[in-house]
Amino acid sequence: MKGSNLIAVFMALMISCVNPYKILGVFPVSFKSHWVIGHSIMKSLANAGHEVHVISPFPLKTPIHNYNDIHLVYDNDLELGNMFIREEYPPQKHMSLLSDLGDFLSNFTLSHPNVKALLEREKHFDAIIVEVFFFEALYGLAAHYNCPLIGSSTFSTSKWTNDLTKAPMEYAYVPHNFVKFSENMNFWQRTYNMLICQYENLFMEFYHYKRQKRIFDFHFGHTGKSLEDVMKSAALVFIYHHFSVLSIRPTVANMIEIGGLHVDKPKELPQDIKEFLDSANDGAILFSFGSMIQGMDLPAEKRDAFIKVFSQLKEKVIWKFENETMLNKPDNVMISSWIPQRDILAHPNVKLFITHGGLLGTTEAIIEGVPVIGIPIYSDQKMNMLQAQNMGLGVIMEYKDINEELILRNINQVLKKFEYQNNAQKISKLFKDRPITPEQSAVYWVEYAIRNKDATHLRSAAHNLNYFQLHLIDSYLFVLAVAGLVVYGLYRVVKRVFGAMLRSLRVIKVKND
Image 1: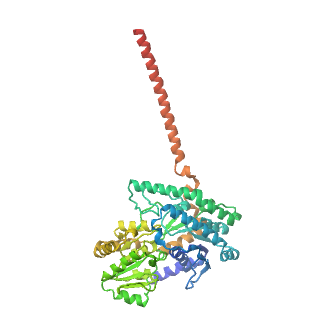
Image 2: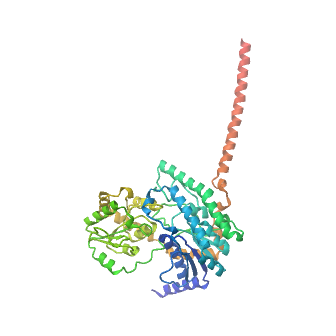
Image 3: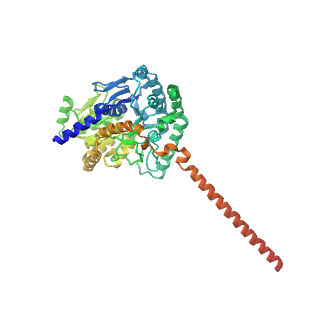
């Protein structure tokens, strides 16, 4: 590194650490994929010299300097069961389940002895970072400590992020996260998307937020603030998004894209996996349903279909499978209950990723330029995979249609058509082409919000308008009323004129008679 670059790096580190801040992160969901994003933000802040405290169900395995765990210990209330049954759930069912989860997590977190001890022990934080995911009552921690509130979304934009920032919701070309539409919707899709989004508006306003307000008032009534006040005061919202890989969405100044933040440089693979992949002279396939969905929960007939197809391939396969044994496992298949997914995708012999379409795994595949076959099950997975398919990164294989013939056809299609590999490499370059890294962006904007006292100048004026004003309903009604009066006035004038003319004609007729 040149001397000037060394000086620049040294000065940047010194500036970051001259005024280290004390920051609390709250990520109570016991879904590993959700925690990874929150952890990545807090780890970036700790590495920048700030003192971070993190409330989560995932204690660090390896200590990080400046990083303090506040461990949430769960019982069995959050057992998810077989996630494959959720494939048929409509969006309304997902909203209801998430609202119940948010109600439980809000009460559980704020009543947890470790959190109570933290609130008693720590009298000051410079900022609070809370995951945006149906537990809005936890935003009250920012009111309790009288410091900036920063949201962190594991999705792209959503009703939940936009309620904090007042970014516009464009139902005509922004599909709801729980439907399998792209931005190019036909009439029926746009209509359905609009109805689902309006249903969510009503559900959140008249059911979910009311539940959260009760929890907020119970725990944070002493602050003199309401949940609405705290939500309006949100300084920033991080969204796990990058415009190169997901449809363009309307954002406002305090919505910050940090897509790819969780992806570190690839590490050395475990010896057995490394040897397995190094010997894959014809290429390798990674097959994983992520951290929340268990591959062993696949119905027997679908699991057997994959086994039969894999046995016919010359490529080797690494399959995330939670049992130590698999009946009729082919010799070219390695199974493991845990895999270093990000590091495997970075291996040059990996040519295909069969995935459920979770945002983290999809992002890792995009960064490494690996095409995908998506088997979306629930939530945003369907939208993620439809976007990947539309961009030529891979194909969707519907869970309900899985059979031996379909699996083999899709694998051959993606592996043998060079455009999938070419498109994956092209999108990878676009995704990585940024002025600063996601880590630098996250650290900068947190420090910015603290330095500039909540960054109130970034907030949209839409916060000052009620629903009718924001959507111009009052203006439309006024214009319609004026138009109606004008039409009515013209009608009366025309009626009077024609009436006079008719009376005149009658008089003339009588005289002539």
